[in-house]
Length: 175
Image (cartoon, rainbow, N blue to C red; front, side, top):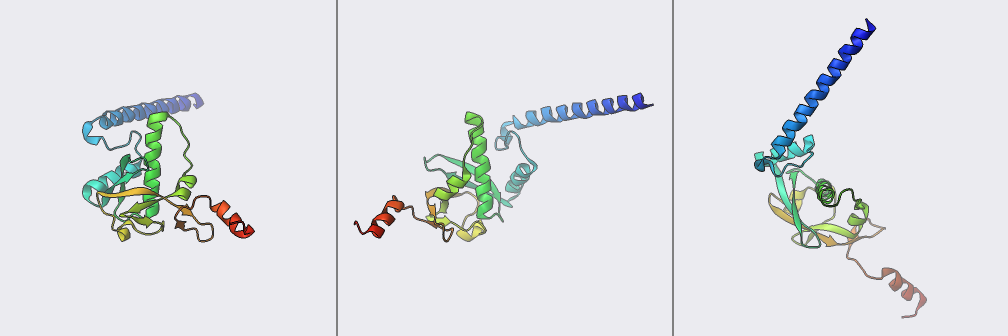
């Protein structure tokens, strides 16, 4: 009896494996369709959901311009916050870098400590603010803007070069 149940498990397992393989091949064939060019190669349910919402009008496409003037598009829900946009940017850049160079680690803590996002020269500082509060809507453009987070207030300020040395010269009176 015990050996019979093991063969049933093996048949069930191989049947599940075959179904997964069939599903994966169908998904690959679908993703190769030119109409679905904006779907990531390994889409998550959230990716597909956002793209469906984009087609239905309850999500927006935002163009992001990097410091080197290259740009890419991300899709977020209409109710998205600045934090949601940052997460979408992070995911998209990681996908782009993975496709270009293989595994590459990007320190996002360093990125957000030195740069912030801006829309029409207004900095998107508060992660909990809705994008619509900044006037961002479908097909809007945002760009990276050099900023430094001050440790005391945890808010972005304009970058000051050689801040450490300026502080030393003021204290020592060697101006």
